[in-house]
Image (cartoon, rainbow, N blue to C red; front, top):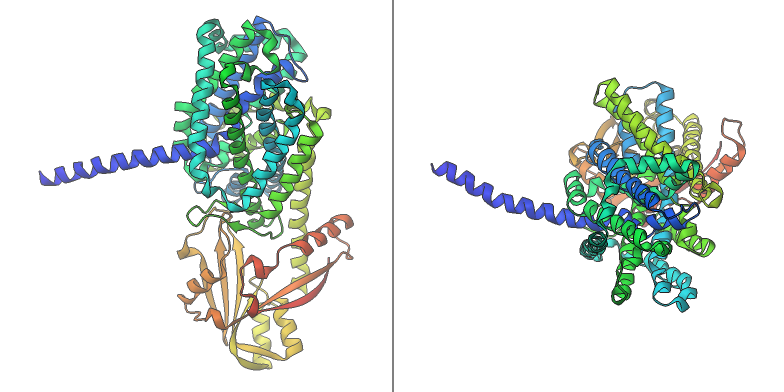
Length: 637
């Protein structure tokens, strides 16, 4: 009897704790994950009726557009992403690079299929950089434009104020999101409650708008308006542009908090607001220039502009942080050169700051605001990158379901075909705005994609050349047994990109200085295609004999290499090196583009430029600068 009571008591105490933790995660997810999709009501409905392909405001058109908005949220976000795509996690992590790494590691494929998956996965990731530039611009600009509704005389101040807000946002990034992270969730919570209530008030006045829940109105709209109706899909898609963020941020919060927050708060608030905007347009068609602010009473306009601006800043923060994380993953997977990465929180591993990405985003975002001049014009550039990424996610999900989960092929094909029809429809509609600005995110994506492939291929050529100029470890140890060089007391660590060959820096040191340390360790860092590697599998030490060791350190693509941690873990396996006494030898390659290869000359020069501007190994691995010896190596590729 006492045993049963104890068990029941433990359960009763743990249950509130679990609920409290779930509530905390859900509130945090609200601030980070749903900011982008949550601020779409600011411009999505407006662009359908007032944008580049604005449709005439009639009862049938309003009901039809609203039906398309509702079913886009239900089918793309609720069904595709939250029900299916989020099942495909890489050790709990989501996002297109994590998904790509999962597939090419665990699924058995031929060379062409593997190459295809890597290429489309990289291109999808590259497109997100374009999205990361446009989202802060359109979100903040659309919020600040409320100022000109309050006082038309302030219209000229919209662009300067938007730029000031954006500059402040990017200048703040080096402090990290940890300091204001606790504010994000409550502010977005208030935002969703307010926009839901604003929409509900209008629905009560015009309840006939609820007929738009029937999908027939959306289908009828497309059939009646033909090509123009299809074009409007590009504006309808603006309502779901944050769906990819739900998947990308899954590793920070988990599936359950994200799904729970969506079902209980976010989706109801969005639907109420969209229905409210539709009801407003049925009653007052002249409000099409900004139906969102048309829902706001005049006395609440100033607080609403402030709340909208705060919400869009938070939405922008989430996208900027996502770009930082994406950049870190690309560096760890070997698709971008080493860059300075600063961890801004001791408790949250995902909170990082990448200066190069931050300043590039700031310049691009401010240029977009100044160049396009209004959120309506920016909307023409928005969406095409996200639709393309969604298509790629659908393709990658197909391989996960087929190769990893072994789902029934007929069921997979039907499901993927259904999603593909939706994705391709939105992509085609978004591409119709190609010459109105949609070219921009595609150009950015193509440029980033080119940089990624160039760096990866250039590194491959570089390593091949270095390998041809050195010896294997076995050959080197055999040569030492025949002619032993002078050994000096001390411990040396050589960083090597190939664990099976002797680093060029060691051969140069031996050739010119005629000595070698009594204890030498070859350190090789490799990135596994999993988010994190546990400490018990992170380091492997091999004793090569004659005072030589080989240390292979494995890190996940969300981790940051830590030389002190590696030494400490290796010492537990018999290395016994003292960090303060080690001499670190690294090579610095000077690249000359001269040899004939599959890589074109301009890409070789681009690779050389990237290599010269990459963060040094000393800084990247946080080596003690007073103990580092750099040896220059001239390499032709």
